[in-house]
Image 1 (cartoon, rainbow, N blue to C red):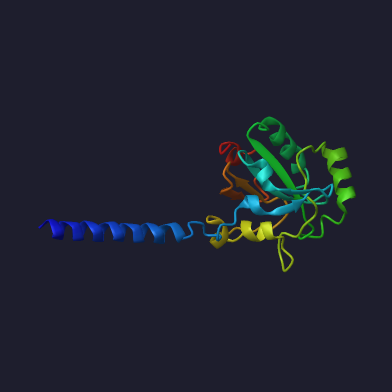
Image 2: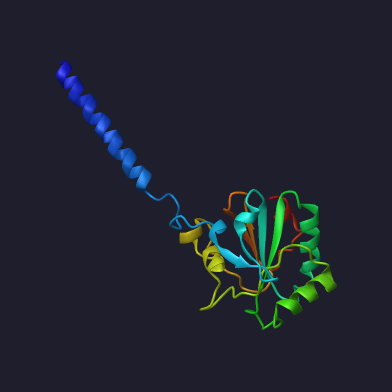
Amino acid sequence: MVKLFKKIASAIFLGTLSLMSFTSFKNPSPSGGKSIYDFKLKTIDGEDITLAKFKGKKMLLVNVASECGYTPQYKDLQSLHEKYKDKLIVIGFPANNFGAQEPGDSKQIKQFCTSTYSVSFPMMEKISVKGDDTHPLYKWLCNKEENGSCSDAPVWNFCKYLIDENGKIIKYFSSKTGPLSEDITKLL
């Protein structure tokens, strides 16, 4: 009886070890381990950064344009940035994908944003947010298989992605959702 008990205990132990090994090699991330913090970006001033710089804060990522009907949202984005700066970082991504409404270069975009709307939140270099040349970050943001929760892609300028403190997408917002709307602020 003792021998039988030892064999059963041994089989259970080995089975548990086998299951633990299988579980530890199984990738829990839908993106193959890629997180939002892994993407390399350039600021509007040409500095290299990763979004890991903002880990621990929520982020609102916005594809922006200087000549769009939604361009006045820069004012509310700046207000949001100032009001919630202890827990939220607003990041602008100039893009010329919709109506060719961001034709300028980095120097022109920065000049417009700072002189017209006093923008002080981080601005990245101009990128593409749709099409064959979509920036890898926006490919990740729009691919549920990679990011685990969102398949929404920008359909116009000033679409927004709210990211939590751990780099997970909380929600996508269309251009129509104002930065100071309760839809966004209640999630902060």
